[in-house]
Amino acid sequence: MKLVIFDVDGTLTDTNGVDDDCFLQAFEDALGITDISDDWENYPHTTDSAIALHIFQTKFDRAPQAEEIQKHKTRFLELLQIRSTLNPALFEEIAGAGEMLKRLSGENDWAIAIATGSRRAAVRLKMKAAKIDGDDYPIASADDGLSREEILQAATAMALKVYNQSEFEKIISVGDGVWDVRTAANLKIPFLGIGDEKTAAKLRHAGASVILENFGDYDLFLSSLESATVPAQP
Image (cartoon, rainbow, N blue to C red):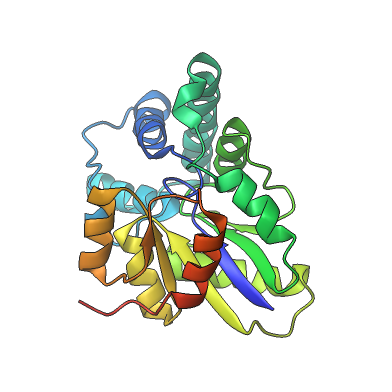
């Protein structure tokens, strides 16, 4: 059995913009923290947990306390819920994502897992808002580690248990960020990029070789999984 590990924001759901806005606003609303850089590529790790740690270390020379993290998580979820109610168009799926997951889950030789730099509760909210059923798939998130590598490894471990496997014949990461490419390269697993022309250019520059705009063509997606390669280190 082969495993496909999907990122969420920008990969399955078109939510990068609203996610960034709510994530930053939650720091101001819940903790009074402003002037935060949203250039995620320049953070040590591009995950909600690692970004929060970096912000506190940079601004206060300390790690965040558990109650501070909880306040931010609570407000972040509240803002996402408000936005999804007021403007559902901000939570669209990437074209074909929901149908692709349904069809892929019916394939006997493919397993599915989610690995995201966002928080687990936020991921479930965004997927539900995008009308993507993700309840049956193991989800590893920023609640499971600071780095993308840790999160992908957690997703793999979860999938081994869920699918009752001792190992997977092949593991492919599917994502839209340059950090996703770097993670796949570091773990030496094949990578399939998802994104428009601008995103595709960034992914190729980071070392990705196989990139699709969306999941509209299921057969092309399946063949791209098979042809995906480990990213070249730039």
